[in-house]
Length: 116
Image 1 (cartoon, rainbow, N blue to C red):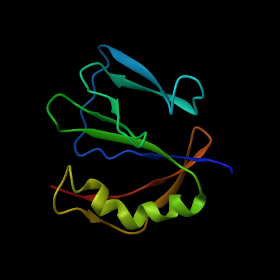
Image 2: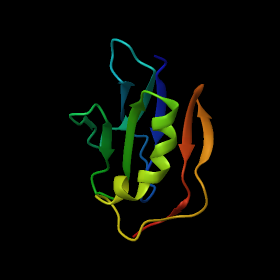
Image 3: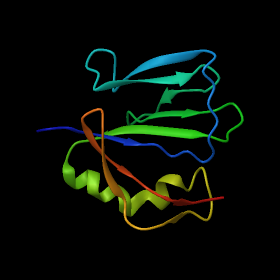
Image 4: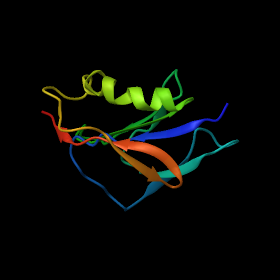
């Protein structure tokens, strides 16, 4: 089965520091699809389903990266975006349809919208 990498970057606000950073291989060091550099002031960790999550020290920015097994799962992300962001934002409003993107040779989706 071909695995499809999905990168969902949910930035609730943008703040980035290049002072120091940690390079993390995703999904793991032994078989990485890609690596991502996360500022040291953020708190990256994997949840029990293998999702890499990171949040800045102030809680203003959030990043989630996970891998989907099929194209069908990838296309269903758009239907679940409100639920995915509910823990971090309120009044989530996605405008339009998710736009396909290729990031580092991997397919993904970009969502535009607003939230509080």
